[in-house]
Amino acid sequence: MLISEAPSPNFNERADGKKPSILILHYTDTQTTFDALKILQSAERKVSSHYLVGDDGQVLRLVPEEMRAWHAGKSWWEGAEDINSLSIGIEIQNPGHSFGYVPFPDVQMNAVVELTREIVKRHKILPYHVLGHSDVAPGRKQDPGYLFPWKRLAEAGVGLWPDVTETIELEAQEIHGKDDEVRSLLSRYGYDPRVDFKTLIDAFQQHFEPEVFHEERAGEVTIHTVRRLMALVKQRLALRPKIV
Image 1 (cartoon, rainbow, N blue to C red):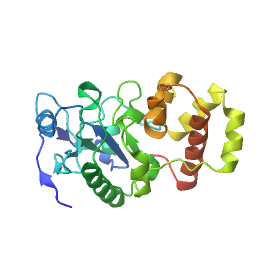
Image 2: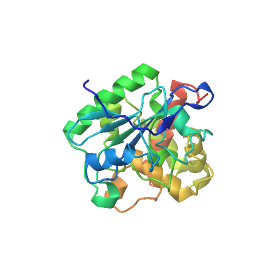
Image 3: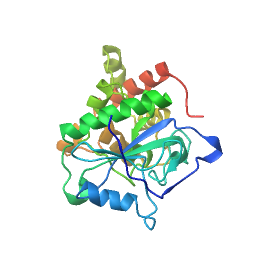
C-alpha cells in the first residue's frame, strides 16, 4: 500500500530488546488530520504513533516499526505495563468525543484494514493482541470508541470477534449476575484486574458490545456481555500464549 513519510521526533528504543506483539488502535480526537499530525510531530507534546490514517484513507508513517512510539501512555495488559515497548500504534483520524464523534468512513477503514493486515502478518501479532486504547487504559481512554467497526476488522483477519455457540449461551446463564466470575473472565482475557468493575465492563463494551452505547446501557452487564466475554476467553485459549 502507499504510505507517505511524516517523521515524528517522538520515539526511542524499545526496552530490553522487546519486539512488537500488540497492535493498539486509537482515534485522534482532533478536528482534522493536519491537526493530529501537528500534535504527533510536536517535540513539546511528546506523543507519537507509528502510523496516522486520515479520514480520506491517506496513510502516514511517523515512527519506524522497530522503534518505540509514545502512544499508549499509562497502560496495562496481561500484567505488562510498558505497552509502548510491546506495541505498534495507529492513530485514526476522527473528531472523537471532543469534537463530535462520527462513524469511520469506508475509504478510511479500507486503508486501516490493509495496513493492519500487513502489520499483524509481519510481526505475527495474535488476534487477541489487537486492542483499542480503551482496552489497555480503561477509564482513562475511550478510543477508538463504540463506533469503530471491530467486527469488520476481525472478519478481515485482524483481531477477534466473539463466536457465541449454543453451549456458551447456556453456560452464560449460570454466570450472569455473578460479578466476581465476570471480573475473573475479564482478567483472564487480559484486562487490568485492579480497575473498578464498571469501568472494565465499559471498556469491554467499547470494543465488543457497542450496541449498549446506543441503548444507554453502557457499564451494565447484559447477558450478551457475559456470552461474548466467555466466547472470547475460549477463543483466546484455543489460540496461544501470553505476552513474553
